[in-house]
Amino acid sequence: MDRRPGQQQQPQPQQPPDQQGEEYHNRFINLARRFIQRPFLAIRMADNNDDDDENGLFLDNDDNVHFFGNVDEDDDDADAEWLADDFSDEDMDDDDIEFHNRIIAVDSEDDDDDLDINNGNNDDNRMDQNEEESRNENETNYDISLPVEHSYLGGLDSVDSARCLFTPGSIVALKTLYLNGMYLIPGQEIPLTFSNRITLQFITAIIEHDDSRTFGIRIGRFEDRFGTTAEIRSYSFKDDRSSITIKVQGRQRFIIVKDFNNEQGEYQPNVRILPEINMHDFFRPIVQSEYRLSRKSRTLITPLPANSLNQYDNNVLMERLKSVLMRIFEYRIKNDEFSYPVDAIAFSYFVLMTIPFPDAIKTHLLKIDCVNLRLWLEMSLLNENFKFICGTCRQNLCDRNSFLVMSKLGTSGTFVNSNGFVHELYTFSKVENARRVSSYSEDFSWFPNYGWIIINCRRCRTHLGWEFETRKPNIVPKKFWALTKNSIRLAFQSDGTNGDELFVYKLFEQNPILDNHH
Image (cartoon, rainbow, N blue to C red; front, side, top):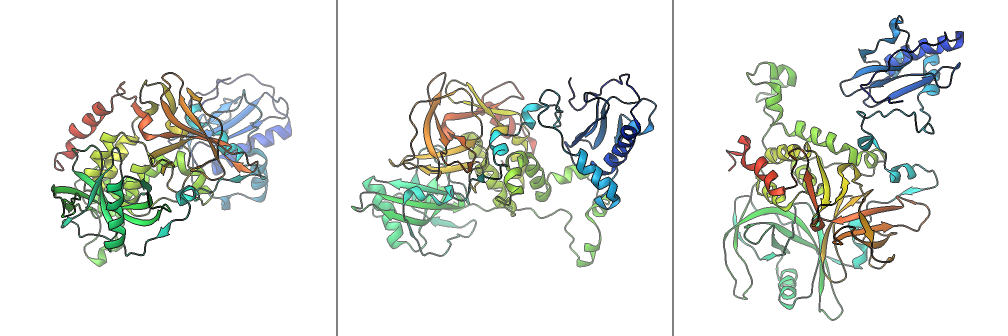
């Protein structure tokens, strides 16, 4: 029987319930009207006379409550649809609370008859197997603070230096590196290993002779003249000083204005530090006494509609982005394992790190100075319907609902292997069309307590990333997948195309809101 929200069941003839069943029925209706207040909540009740005879209520996205099951058409309490009133637990008496505790649980063993309570879409509503396992009392959620420590690198010496921030708009001579395909986002911390003699001398000189311990990393393609300042936070030489491993943190964006080489032949161009333009609240009072007016009251005296003004309100945009990201981070947030950045600037960069946007989109977003515009564009991108495909053969791999948080940074992480190759990874709970091509190993594992297995695309055999699996009985999830940024693409389904460049053109070149920016 299809019981998805929005599809009401036709009333069926039924035997009158006994006195106890009728009492349950009436109490159920009254309680549900006061209790159901949050989206995607369903309550189901079976009459005592017939286990197959079920009634229930569910709440849709518009806060409309729908009744399903066998309903007496003449019963005023069994309206097919009505708007839920705002009631609190204080409105319930002891009998109501006891009754609520008896009916709120839905039998999970009824696989064939369970109600899909998320817009009728099982894919959007499915609970990852990893999250279901984590509810076992004898198991422990993986500590997501471990990956960001990069313990596989061994002991690194911390650098004693004050945080180096240049004045926005100023021109500075900055030693700069170009690392092919590397994107360093402000606030992001990444490990790097260098064994090339020239680069090794370059980094060593910064550590030993530059008090700021800061250099620049160009982003995107070589012809893109943008980059991010990188502050060295810790480092370690090999015993013979044949290589060095460092951890750097992105600080500020810059644009190269003039190319220069210093006396040592090192690339040290003049760069302009780009500002972070954060527009203030349109309704922020100028006079202290006006704070007594509510935001809604101030909105009513403007000629502009509220929807238009909300596009330029960072707080509104952040809340909308959080609602989109909630499917990914909700479980960790509930367990106090994760929290969003509070600052609008930091939050805009967090979104950029969390979603594996194509390089062209990342470059465009990092060029934007206005924080509000960056948030607005990220909101537009996340409103698109996309999935992840193999970057070579376009075989389907997973959808956006498969994201899994395995780090304090969210679903993303940047790691370096023993040979110095840097991999930007995104973690997922489920991946299809991938095959294992190596045995299990725990050597140099980026996720402590997990071993790794190399995976390739099943169709074209391109390297996709790794499957991580734990053999410790008390840790969940038991396994997850980490795909490299360079191996996957976003397939935007709204326009029927897989072309990243076409989507970038539609979003950035044909959008009037960007005219003033360009």
